[in-house]
Amino acid sequence: MSKFRLLHIGLDDTDSKDGMCTTYVGAVVVDRLREMGVKIFDYPRLIRLNPNWVLKTRGNCAISIEVETRAELIPKIKQIVFETVEQLAELDHETTNPGVAFLEGGDIPEELKTYSKKVIQDIVTIDEAENLAKRIGAEVFKFKIGRGIVGALAAIGEELKQDKTYELVAYRVPNNRGTKRKIDRESVFKMNELTYPSTFDNIDLATGEIRITPHTPCPILYGIRAENPQTAVKAHNIVKALEPIERWVIYKTNQATDEHIRDARISKVQAERSFMVRGEVCKKPRIIRGGHVIFRIRDESGGIDCAAYEPTRKFRETVMKLTVGDVIKAYGGVKQKPSLPLTINLEKIEVIKLSPVLEKVNPVCSLCGKRMKSAGKRKGFMCKHCKLKLPKEAVRFEEMPRLITLGVYEVPPRARRHLAKPLIRLSPQVW
Ligand SMILES: [Zn+2]
Image (cartoon, rainbow, N blue to C red; front, side, top):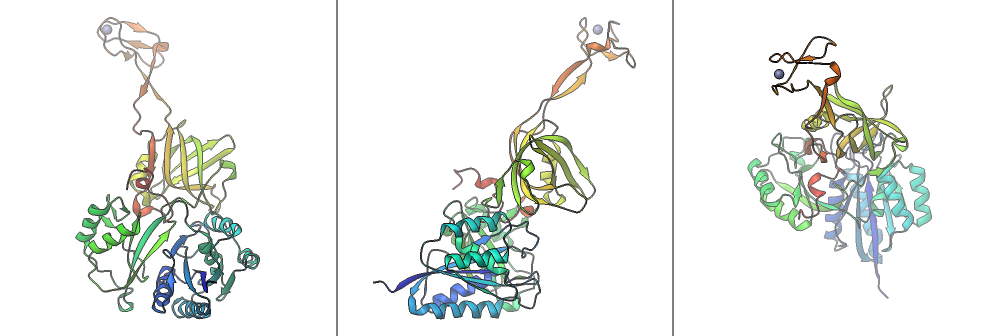
């Protein structure tokens, strides 16, 4: 009889806007467990949760780690997890409410898998999480109000058997945190050249902005997103950090997979969640104050506003080319602002059908072949040369060229959600 056991560890809500990051807490736990000789199974997982939930943490990510260990080491492993969370979590912050979950055994119960999908796409209460833990025999531990147990359990239950990506995250030494990140810009461009599209979102080509370094005071120096762990390591070896790296880790993740998005009819769309709806443009795009572009679509069940906000830059210009009658799929998170209609904050659109745009043109003279002029208001048309006259009913309608083609359009990397699947990942032959 084997004395080895599988143990799933889940962590969530250890960070705040002022620093720390749950991925760092996870990386430290992984290193401490390795130091005591515990075998980490596969890669630790970084699971992004519903990005539109109002109570979310900054990046709304949870971590899970699966270990294979001798049974007698389990209490020691749990102790290391608790100590690390206590030491690193931003417990002084009112909104930081860490949670830890443990589940023994290899197979993930179906009920937990369903629950994880719900935490990624919908909203789950702390009570729901606790009740589920009891039913499936998972242990959960709450720090303060312990909202983190919601994500800690969800991270254990999302095994990433379907679509997944990887992120290699490198961390700064404590003394440097909060200061400007020092990284060789050229090396990032070189890395992108040599590894894209097996790595992605390295650079925003429109602005030249490096995307692998965050702009927050968190411990992350950079994160490289990749289709597989080998390319992530290759890219990491090309990037030159101009400051020491304390440690790095590779996470398997649901980032860039669109896992947050559910297909729905427009009448079923709810605030604080993300959807893909198919509809016909029923109100032309217009620019509103702040440079945002708003238009409206409808299906047989109802209508909804769609918005391309100012930070999406060039994507707004694409959206402006839509017109009434066009059929699109709209992808995005839904927000409810007081006294405003429900609005989809667009992450991408697919243009499925373009409606013909007709414009009135004057008829051509049948004698000389030149374009006729208006003979005056409601007086029809006249040829200047031949003096030929035609009634106003002779007006012609011509189909205008459309400035947009069928296809998928997305917001630039700088405006992209962690979970949103970039276009480059939609084509199956990319790697
Ligand atoms: Zn003429």
